[in-house]
View 1 (tube, rainbow, N blue to C red):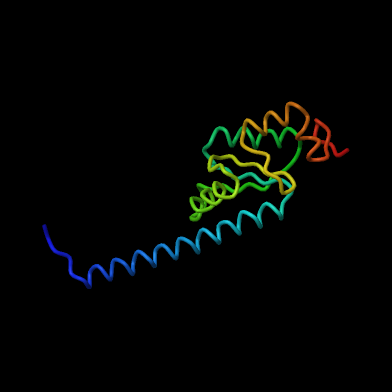
View 2 (view 1 turned 120 degrees about the vertical axis):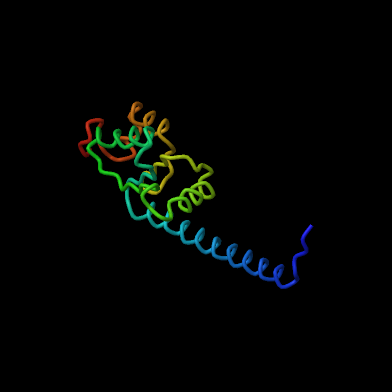
Amino acid sequence: MAKISKSTVVILLVLTVAVSMSNGVEANASSEFVKQTISSHPIVIFSKSYCPYCRKAKSVFKELNQVPYVVELDERGDGWNIQSSLGQLFGKRTVPQVFINGKHLGGSDDTVAAYESGELAKLLGTSATGKEL
């Protein structure tokens, strides 16, 4: 078995600490981005452009004549970090994750169920046809 010099161990330790610290900074920035985005828009969907469940959730808002703010995680360099932050903040890393007026609605099934029950229209202050009440 090859021996590792003390200086190699020190270098590896320093690199490990540096990577760990940079990941913490990125995670904090991603969490702040998630919180800021949710608080800045009435409807937010964290999505992936190719995901059929995301398309389904987005189509519900089209039916209600509402335009959500969509963050396509697969089209961002920091998408993985944002998705991890969603998991830490809300307990789910899956997409889509839908937010209405700053509150977490859930994923595709939750969004469709809220739409079908009329609860989504109530949350948005619109009628089932998308017209304001």
